[in-house]
Length: 73
Length: 145
Image 1 (cartoon, chains in turn blue, cyan):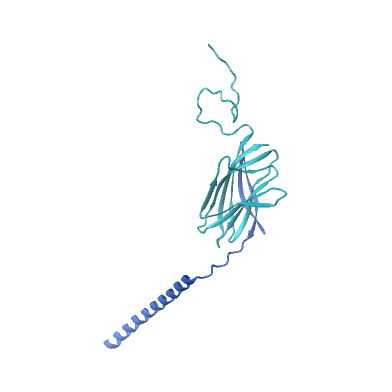
Image 2: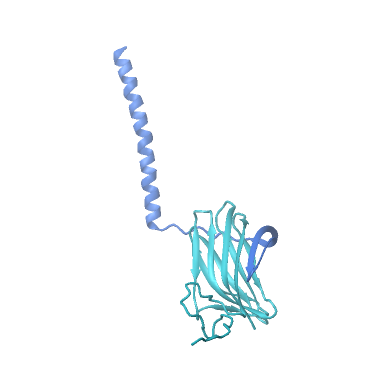
């Protein structure tokens, strides 16, 4: 438990008072991550396949260029 | 014919001797006074602060009418309002979630009364992983008891 300084301005009838007050602060537990359902797992798999395809495309383009270079040379 | 009479003080429940309609009739009686406040500060990541907005005042009771709570975060946040009614400890009467700003006001006769020996607090949660600024405004009316 720690303390923080906050600003307080209160009006009661004709009187207004501004002052610094101490408020108590404590940590709260983060809720556990939601367990993944079938849709989440399927989306992850699709994303993984998509990433692999992108990597392969890059390699295919590189190989094509090398082949052109060899045929030209 | 000439009539003379002393005009009594205005107030709720008192006869209205004014000869013309007043667009600014007072809403509060002589035993009532406005009450509103602003509380502003920061809350660390994944933390909760306790802000006591009303500590029972001898001779008065608060008719609490609601307010606004603002957070400069974009993640959904939560807060709750508790009242301490001895001999019971602080107990919540409102738990709510909001994104950016929450506002809740209600009018007579659906008001929350906080009596002389009672206290009211807000528990403000920061559910984000970064600290944020918060601003709370509460309003109501105090009455002599």
